[in-house]
Amino acid sequence: MGASEPGDGGWKKCDIGCGISRLTRPAGFVEMGAGHAPPPERNRSGRDAMTRPTVRPLRPQFSSGPCAKRPGWTISSLTQAPLGRSHRAAIGKARLADVIERSRKVLGIPADYRIGIMAGSDTGAIEAALWSLLGPRPVDVLAWDSFGLDWATDITDELKLTAHVQKAPYGALPDLRAVDWSHDVVFTWNGTTSGVRVPDGDWISVDRQGLAICDATSAVFAMDLPWDRLDVVTWSWQKVLGGEAAHGMIALSPRAAARLAEHRPTWPVPKVFRLAKNGKLAEGVFKGETINTPSMLCVEDQIDALCWAEEIGGLKALIARCDRNFAVIADWVAKSDWADFLATDAATRSTTSVCLKITDPRVTALPQAEQAAIAGAIAKQLDADSVAHDIGSYRDAPPGLRIWCGATVDETDLIALLPWLDWAFANVMVTQQKTA
Image 1 (cartoon, rainbow, N blue to C red):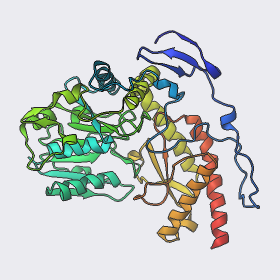
Image 2 (cartoon, rainbow, N blue to C red; image 1 turned 30 degrees about the vertical axis):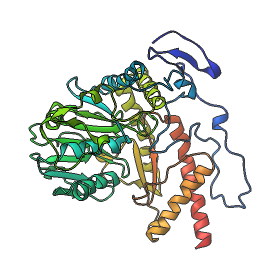
Image 3 (cartoon, rainbow, N blue to C red; image 1 turned 180 degrees about the vertical axis):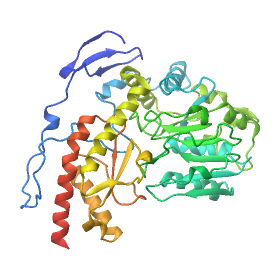
Image 4 (cartoon, rainbow, N blue to C red; image 1 turned 135 degrees about the vertical axis):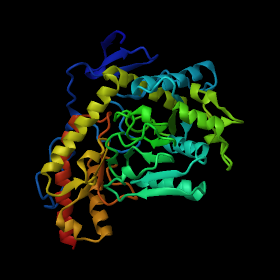
């Protein structure tokens, strides 16, 4: 880390050797002040069912994507972005290659794995894998959230492959023991819309003949992935590190790279998904020569996020932040008389995209649409009070709340949020009973 100097408002300006300067939190610094003040009181006509909390989160960004920026982030963090320059110029390629190698270092990706930057966020990265790699072997697809179901649909309806699709309801996993590892296997590590993750990688065969193709967008940088058991891993910048949207990444094992070189799909592969041509890998993609034009502003933002990750202690520190954040919610759920995790098995609960369901019998007795209306009213109330933005459940998921607990979220903000959840639920129920 380079030398630091006093900055504005108790922060330090720090040159961390990434070609950028940014504000960082000095040791022992505690964020308090105006951001924690309660919003102005309004005439609520006696609607309050419990005492209105007096402390609110300093940063109310709890969206599950795009997610909160790293602590201390400001727009000035991006001043070194080479705007107005070609991404194929030396400076642009160097920045893109920096993202690849810093990602490899932080995540501990093996040296013989190829890493590329893709268009279209995690969706573009996983679709590139499906369109480019599938076909030589039968396919197993595991689906327990909205995106897993999307990949199953694309494989069966768009690529017209016969696949063994194992589905599980929201809150549960399919039978991992039933996977046939002579097949290619497509799955999500962490169901962003269901709050359910695989507990570990022990179920993935080390002697597999097929490829393990993993959408890990809300798991990478938050969970310890067994790279030796994964052949394709995809993620986006907008999740655990809070990067800007639209860019994805793909990591390929040597086995996956060999498949790319050997296999020619029977269907046309769109250029934006094309990782090989005429029996050869598009090696430039894995050196920062992207297929399409990336945003250099977003690239700079990802470099900033990766530098922050390195500064706080790398992957181990990122995982620890996520685990502490999840523990805050878990302790509250254990005492709640109206909310519970959507994930039924404690071993499979996501530590990032934490999905909650309402268990109060007054709500569960209602039709699904009315349950959704109550959950939506809670989210809307907290959004209006600038306490929590974008915490409604995903549109295809069961009614409830979804609170992002990734590494860029501060534990103190989650602690401040919890009394507001109780308060909002109580108020919404008062209103519901009056209108029933």
